[in-house]
Amino acid sequence: MSKKLFEKYKVIDIDTHITEPADVWTDRVASKWGNKVPHIRKVDGRDLWFIGDTPAGGPGFYTMAGHTGTFPDVPMGYDDIPAASYDAQARLRLMDEESIHGMVLYPNLGGFGSGGFLKLEEPELMLECVTAYNDFLVDWASADLNRLLPVMALPFWDVAASVEEIQRSASKGHRAVLFGSRPETFGEPPLAHKHWDPIWAASQEAGLPISFHIGGGDISDLVNDKAEMGTKANFARGGSLALLDNQSCLASLIFGGVCARFPDLDFVSVESGVGWISCVLEMFDWQWVNGDVAKEHPEYDRLPSEYFARQIYGSFWFEKREVETAINAFPNNVMWETDYPHPTSQYPSPNSAAVRPADYAEEVLGGVDESVARAILQDTPARLYRVEI
Image (cartoon, rainbow, N blue to C red; front, side, top):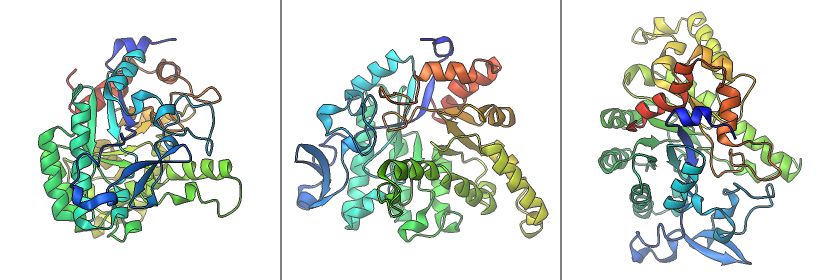
């Protein structure tokens, strides 16, 4: 296994997930809520999350690293998934084996934009479960806070509570704020609306970048095959289209003036790839100039591609054909990830098309200028997530 780049740099994987242990909420949330608190039950041999008596997924559905099947053939539960998905010491051992210095940590049960907490329905309980998760994540990452990099969940349905939670979580060691790219799917104002400005302001003041992970809206079509195309085909289709949501997210941030109003706030497009970035930004620039946007908004002092270069970042983990185009256009705005331990992660099952992380990086970045490869794998994420190198 080639690890030339991984031996040379302190590599940071900017998108991995925690498979939440069964006791995250039952140990941390007030007992008065009873079984409304997220908890695990075993049903027909399978570990499943429940909120009250309503099923809410299960650890096996999103922990596929090393599994020999593909959806809907998923592991049954904690006994069948890698310990590194839910145990911090095991995660650090895995990182050592793969020569990865740091991992940025995202959730599963709460959703990739925290919308999953809305299933709890009770506002007080929703907030309590968010704060419990954020506290758990810092405790989990305390195994090595310079290598395990927590991203906080946000009670986005309450802007004032969100501002307080950003301030609280920043003081505890969180490195970024998770936000959904499509808040309107949960009945909230769209991303570009100034309703969200207090959150952007609080994040900017705290020095925490905003993470837009794909699937931050409604992703039920991943498992609801309404077209009857086949379970596996529909899952692959939904997984592919989820990557496109972040293109709309970038349009909202730029055309809606969020970048202009908050010039010192960084944004990260997570798990959405980078091959499309140059094409989309060229289109944005054309529409911006052709539509005379600056005339309507003289406070917008840059082109979309210039806003991107200043404060927006993307990440990749499987692309080969178009990665070079993105790197050449925006060498300081591209980072690398594995998506461990999700179905498309770089920790392959025996029948997966994926390769091991170091081998993939060597293949894609082996011919890239050394300073650029170092920026992608180490320097850019180290700056964004405040990692000591």
